[in-house]
Image 1 (cartoon, rainbow, N blue to C red):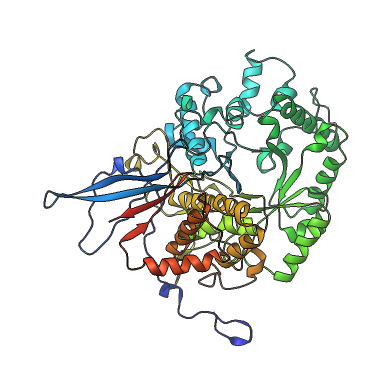
Image 2: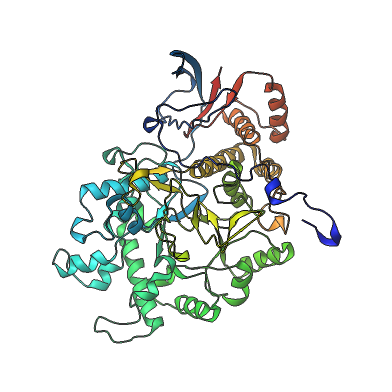
Length: 557
């Protein structure tokens, strides 16, 4: 790739990449379902272990061991494990906020083979347990799912006399299972949940996800008479806002917003709707509006919009810096949506493990409130007319593979793992790939993301103890150029952050050492981490992942 003036930015062809045409670890199938596996001589095999340490556990070192049995020789080796529990706790509610839709219909198809679920069964314990396990798995990774409800069932229950009242009022509130997620009831021991955020509810709720409100007849009254979009928005948003206020805390504290439209270049319509909402005189005026469009277009084309949810990869540094300043002047908020290198890590399967980890750091550096990833269960590649994807045997989940060139299979919007962060434990469409588990499996990308979300909690504890200047230095050294700072740098390999997982773990470990009571703040903690990493390079201690709000974990062996 040649840069301006002919200067080389990188060399070699696509196939010269270190990871070209390699298999990437992705689906975190529980070890209980694969208790034995082969590891060739001279090779290694990663096993990911989640450890949740409850808050009441005292700090100190906890000893254990992992036993490895070798089938060919019938011998076993015991690897000692030391779990160090530090004396501080990460908060239950994530600082770096997230939002990821889930598709209830696709889940139903995979787990039952049915295209739809009769509304009379929607709340049966069997199906509620299935929905719970999806939301719980995501929440255990500090990620908030949204959507997935069968809203048409409100009509059914009203028609059959199970619920009574004005249908518009009944539909201007979350479905009952959503309510239980917002108030935290779905994340309790009574619902078989333990982990981060136990008993804590989700804090974001989209009204009209992906712009679906415009297809729900908001511009007509109960008699079918057209009342106009502006009057419809005032009526329905006020009904929604009244419900949230009347629900009391914690639900009344949930951020609700109207998802005006998705990825539309019809800026006049978007601006018109946003302006109608801004002019609401009732309680609905408190509901902010959101659209997925570039901030560059939002500040110039849709200034009445409250939240620009913008994607970002390559960027014009000056234009973005100017747009960010302009949106602050008009009170527009900025969330991020999808995106990728070099602005932040790529989201597809073949990205480095550090890619998803970098996203919360990038968000936090620039005070971006929320990251929106477009889907977690895109099991049917309907946008490319390909139907159901065999998720355990095909990497591509989105787009077309219409050509074959030096990059391999490629085509329109070709994406490996795109839109899939949760994998079905049962698959009626591809029974040879089914594990017959009534719940989802996490992707490793979800675990990488959680690591970054946890990092932000460490950063905020560090800020509280050591101040903003030290924190700014820390973040700037770990992610020097992210979001619009990255400009139009080559997406591979020219990213500003380290692509070595161990470098990120060393920073985490050093932060943990500073956060314990009695430890002093470091003027430049990143330099200290590098020095300590070099000092440890000859030791036999390897620091690894721990899914816990209270610990740093060490494997000694």
